[in-house]
Image (cartoon, rainbow, N blue to C red; front, side, top):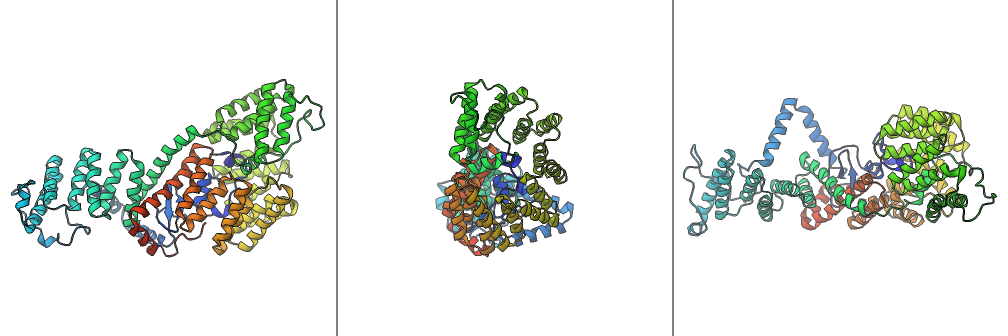
Amino acid sequence: MSAERVSRPVSNTNLATSSLSSDASSLPLWERLSTWASENKAVVYTIAGVAVVVTGAGVAYYISDSRKGSNAAAEEKKRLSKKERRKAKQEKEKEKTQPEVREAPQQPKEQTQAEAPRVESDPLEGVPQIDESTVETLSDQERKEYATKLKIAGNKAYGDKSYNDAIELYGKAILCKPDPIFYSNRAACYNALGSWEKVVEDTTAAINLDNEYVKALNRRANAYEHLEKYSEALLDYTASCIIDQFKNDQSAQSVERLLKKVAEAKGKAILEGKEKKLPSPTFVTNYLQSFRPRPPPEGLEETAELDDESGKSRLRAGLQAMDKKTAEGYEAASEAFDKALELGDLGEHEAFAYNMRGTFRYLRGENTDALEDLTRSVELKPTFTQSYIKRASMHLELGNRDAAANDFEQAMEQQSEDPDIYYHRAQLHFILSEFADAAKDYQKSIDLDRDFIFSHIQLGVTQYKMGSIASSMATFRRCIKNFDKVPDVYNYYGELLLDQQKYQEAVEKFDTAVDMEKQTKPLGMNVLPLINKALALFQWKQDFQEAEKLCQKALIIDPECDIAVATMAQLLLQQGKVPEALKYFERAAELSRTEGEIVNALSYAEATRTQLEVQEKYPQLANRLQGMGGNIGGPMR
């Protein structure tokens, strides 16, 4: 959970991307983007023109037309009784490890049921004695007959759990005829014995003979996973899903599980070596403006006479640098707050200094140090409620909901009429999908101070999430009337209009927001209206070219804007520009602040990388998918 989720307006990415999920706009970046594709949690995969999706369990790929098959399967499942579904599931589990008894569609035409020799009650009787020397003396027909008989004997031994005997029998069958089924069946024996390297060896031989052999791919993937070779396992499961036309739920779930494993492993390494630095100025600005603006503390005004090398002077310099709302300004502010506490002699401003240093430490991802600073701040000045609120945000990001709730209670005890308390507690309720409680707190925040625009915006968003569309739109119309010079109002109102597919009106609102941002903050404009307009033009007109231009413009203004990077990645992926999209997904991982966000970003990157590998290794699958996909990708919703 990030600062974005807790303290900035939680609608700040794009409401149009969240209409299919009840709480999507409150989720981290990658989960918010997931709703571009589908509310259906069935996992579907494509190579070209793909839209990557995070479902409840992980990352998936999406083809709009392929949902028909998923829905049909779901309807069929509904018609089955509970007992029948349980039996079917047990059979599927059993099938994963069982050797193939009947001839499979993948085997050569010459291996038909008619050619199989009849075996009496005990298939082990009369098993041919075969070795490398004797097999050379057999005719082609004899080899076929012996191979089939040895396979049947191997199946019987496997059924009796005589795995070593079965391994020997399948090995002799392979001597007679190197058939992919024989290799796969022997791999099933090694699987039962936990000999994972042997499983990989035999399934690889089977796949070399038949590169669309689903059962062998799944067995090898399972072995790779046991060997902790997660990338290799992911590739096999993905290929299996494509070959199976996305009908095997277990394989699809395995893809999701492995994407998470691969991403977690890489994410931890990235986090350990990650430089602690401030996020994009867009992120920092939105976090800071989630608190009501207040004048500098008395004694730190611009007109106050202060020694340039004093702690108070550095504290004032930090506040002045923040006003620039640029990357350079925020870096200068962070350094100034550090220096202020280093110099000391802050007097009554010491609690404020700890608050500000803690704020920027938090934004850099230094949560432990930030918590210490904010705790010191409330110890020095218990009535400084903002420190409680910020500490609550950090506790929530770290998953400690009780500690967050306790901080809000302490803040209330100190100043029960502080509107910021209600606004940020409402954010907590919103994130937890407690919309009715959120609406009450937003309204209380407004009652105490009607001049803070984000309380009104967030109330409108909450009403929208609750299904009160008319109330929500009325709230935003009042916002435009009362805050007609504030660009954020037009941006968020545009998001609501975009969610309702009122494209022309949405674009007009985004344009208004962009113009106002240019006029009021030319050096530190909020790039979110540009990104929202890009999404609107894509959804409305499928105008990739203009959408990309807008995202590029946003990235020129704010090169580290995570939302702009993610949107660009999705736009490229929608067009089948997989290598280019991969670069942006990897960049998004670099920009992520927390381990959870890094893992989500890397999940996209790994999903995209796997597509490239499948395309390279199985080019026929890419062609097949393009034929299957129809309107591949669908709208970015």
